[in-house]
Image (cartoon, rainbow, N blue to C red; front, side, top):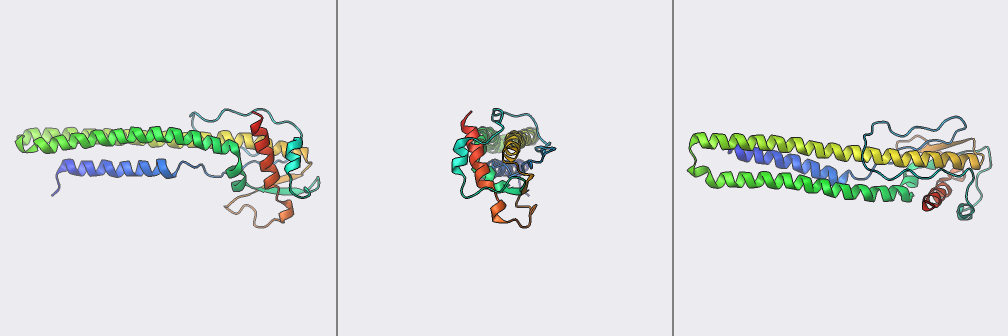
Amino acid sequence: MKNPAQLAFNTVLLIAVAVLYFLHFNQRPAAAPVAAAAPTETAAAPADTAAAPAPAPEAAVPSTASPSVAAELAGPAPAAGAIVYVESGKMLDGYQGMKDARKAFEVKAKGWERQNQTLISGFRTAVEQYQKSAATLTPEQRAAAEQKLQAQQQQGAVEQQKIQAQAQEAEAKLTQTVLESVNKKVEAYGKAHGYKMILIAAPSGTIAYGEKGLDITQPVLAYLNSEYRKK
């Protein structure tokens, strides 16, 4: 039968691996749908968020497209009154505001990873010290030492859960902040061009088919980046 302290050590390492997997591979926010620029309302950003540092809100959007953006349009734009669409994944991936927000999130993620490594190293050191002295301890002393290690392992697991929760909250806040800014700009773009509606084509299959001539992803992306650079 394995040493109880070794079992506890293995347990905390498994938790640590899960947290590190989250920090390394869950840093990129999902490409959530942005609001359609309809005459009456704008879709709301995700509501399941918590406060965490995120990119500062951007300036108000002008009511008309800038000349620099108009020069970037490839081919004739759909006529006023048309129902058009954007591909949310491409738009958010290409939006400089989202890129900058992700970089800021990665900096925070590295700090959380360091906290996690400190927890692992501290517990590993305690286990190694116990193993070196275990042979010289009485049964009562060994039981007390193992109980102390178990308590340290449990506290480490609690701290790791807090780290994971911080990362999730920061990611949700980042996504909400960026999408709120994008929603306003897409709405302004739609009004400036007289579109009846701007639909969202997302990987989940919101739009099964749309004519390429109605895809305004690239001009909208150019507009978003142009406005973002004015900050």
